[in-house]
Amino acid sequence: MNTFCRVQVEVGDSVSCGEAVEEVFSELRRLENTFSRYLSESQVSRVNSDAENSPVAVNEEVFQLVARALEISCLTEGAFDISIGADVDFWRQCERDNCLPTSEQIKALKDRIGYKYIALDYQSRAVSFTRPGIKIDLGALAKGYVLDKAVTILKQMGISKACLNLGGNIYILDSQPQDILLRNPLSDESFAARLSLMNASISTSANDERYFLIQNKRFGHLLNPLTGLPAETDILSVSIISEDATFADALSTAIFVLGLKKGRELIGRVKDIQAVIISKDTKVYPVTPGLRSGCNGVYKMEGGKG
Ligand code: AMP
Ligand code: MG
Image (cartoon, rainbow, N blue to C red; front, side):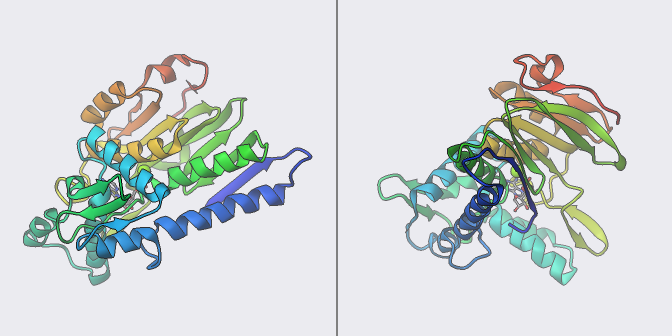
């Protein structure tokens, strides 16, 4: 997944720490082999190479995740869109060539993005693209999905206390609240907020750590599917807290692209999540009432310094 993974577990008598960690890593490898579009044998690579010609049958797990991604695209009005693959490839190529894109190239690219061009056949469990040039990229929700699967495995092993960190997407498996410090995107010296989490995940999307470097200029890796360009937004970072790590991951990417106003509106309509947005004017917005009041006792915002 081109990122780091840190696993801490507290084990009882029935299972050893090494066994638990090994199970998590073997699940991670399995999912990478299934979902990576950079491994030619993966199911997603098969979809990307053949689905514009004929429907590609995939396994239940891939089908369900693609279906979920399309639902989230509808919810976010296309701000989250797994058909972003060709756009990501294009910007990577611009970086390799150290060449800024032309407006004609961007215009042509827009024809190769659009979740509406991904068709699912529920009977044959097949994916097809209704336009040439579409490529899917599950990078914006895969880390969350891996966390959900890893937590399921740990629970099945009887483990009820763990902290998993996959490239900055964190899951706290614990019935006691654990503190998480939110990084200040503008300074390594301070943190932006302190949150308490239990049995929940937190996913943060920001543009400062991963970017395309072209002619010494940074272009953020979060792309706006409607323009094909790196998302221009008034948000520095957005963190979504949810028991559902897949959803938290996808939604944090989408809210970043939507920006503060539309992002806050959408968060207000979604159930069972909490959110913190740090805007470019370095205000910390605990967007959801749960964070302000510690409402259901699961999450509370304990302040912080900006
Ligand atoms: P994340 O770090 O979870 O926010 O996901 C970022 C990754 O998702 C990028 O590196 C791209 O591979 C992909 N991506 C970028 N923009 C989008 C978008 N608007 N919708 C879906 N995936 C995206
Ligand atoms: Mg994401």
